[in-house]
Amino acid sequence: MNREQLAEELDLKVDALMAPGTDTSTPDPLLQLADELRMLPSDEFRDGLREQLMEKAESLEFHQNASVARDEFTFTQPDLTPAFSRQQFGALPADPRNFLLSFLSHAALVAFIASGIWAVHSPVVRNRILTSELTYEPLPVGDVAPHGGGGGGDHSATLASRGTPPKFSDQQLAPPAIVVRSETPKLQAAPNVLGPPDLKLPQSNQLGDLLSPNVMPSNGAGSRGGIGDTSGTGVGTGIGGGVGPGYRAGYGDGIYTLGKGVTAPHALYDPDPEYSDEARKAKYQGNVVLSVIVDATGHVRDIRVARSVGMGLDEKAIEAVQKWKFAPGMKDGRPVAVQVSVEVNFRLY
Amino acid sequence: METLERESDDRPLIEAAQSEPARFAALYDQNFDRVYAFFARRVSSREQAQDLTAEVFHQALASIRTFKWQGAPFIAWLYGIAANVLSKHWRQQGRHSDEELTDLSSMGGDIERSVMLAKAVGTLLPDQKHVIVRRFVDQKSIKEIAQELGRSEGAIKQLQLRALENLRTKLGGTI
Image 1 (cartoon, rainbow over the protein chains, first blue to last red):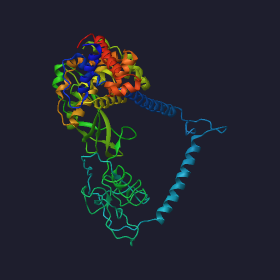
Image 2: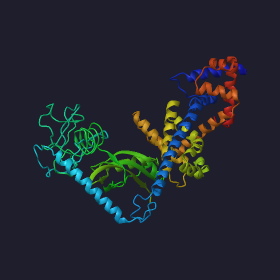
Image 3: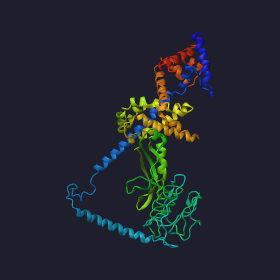
Image 4: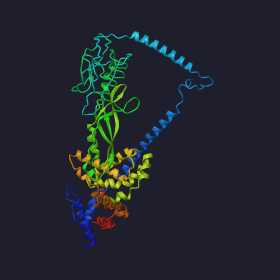
């Protein structure tokens, strides 16, 4: 058989090999090579992925630099109270007493104006019920990561008061209010909050924010008519027509990171993870880092592997951490959901 | 594994990428073929292998600053990520074949062979390489390639034969 016939015959076999659903096992070494070549990556993919990664790297670098710049800025901020540090301000000598005097006189003026506004807008209180018997009820944990939240308020001078939110509904006809300002509302409708109607939260006769420390009836310092200290037609410290510290419809569970008054959750029950069989056989050790959210009830959710070691240890780490129980992180005296990293060490002794 | 031991000194590249993420490119170039080969032997299509490879490198870049040098080569870390990515992929497809992922030492030979093959294709003469890439990677017919190169179909078939023979020789006739 000459080269031309050989090339022809090989191509027929290659055609057959490349037809979909063909059994690719063959004793012919050239066809085995052809089969392997079919899985080679394309140059476009290799170059395209490299480009994507470089774009992402640039963005990471930008954030890294921005963070450094922010830190530097913090250290180079000018002293906003030069009087206290006895620095000269221009040509004038600085004296701390001047600053104190100025501060006290301004504070007195603000208090005087605020008291006038308070007197004019004194609310009509109806069904006044103190809610000090209500205890903290943690928001339920759903299958899907909750994100909803609501807020509201009517620019009251005090925080929204404690109570329970009204029922959820797909449509909101009237926002909830603790302190009713109009005795003759334009629309007679039961107040509700936005969210799935089958979502149930604790109910009582007293509307309010489940997590509020304030027992004096108040719609809160926020705006748009709900109950809260932010903005919205819902209930809580979030934004929107839902309930809780998140945003939009549903019940909320805003997620915090540590710092700025947010304390870290600490483990109450943290059984050790098991070793995977394959890692034990290979005498493989390593530290798996998991990114988790410890919610306001101290349960762990949204577990993600931040640093993987493989060999089945990542799965074992997740399995263990799922069982852990925490005292939740706190912010302003309230339990909140906090995103933290958990390092799980696997060591063979 | 022989290759892991041979290339264990990639610490400077890792540290460079940790302080300057754009330098991750060097780690990508050094390890792309192995990570891709890891998947190519385990999934049914090139598209799946490419998607999973991309996932591994994106995860690696995102976590590079948290990587702690413990003496093991960088590729071992990438294989760890790859094993997780593949395990998740199989779970999504309803497969439970985690045991297939565990024995890196037995698949090391296959991966190295795939890496050698990819490099060998790069060393072919330009017309042979073109035929191999268009025929097998891009799945073009002999007729289409002949039209692209302005040559007869017989000439392209001869180029295909020569290219495959050369690749076999470059791989040391291991097949």
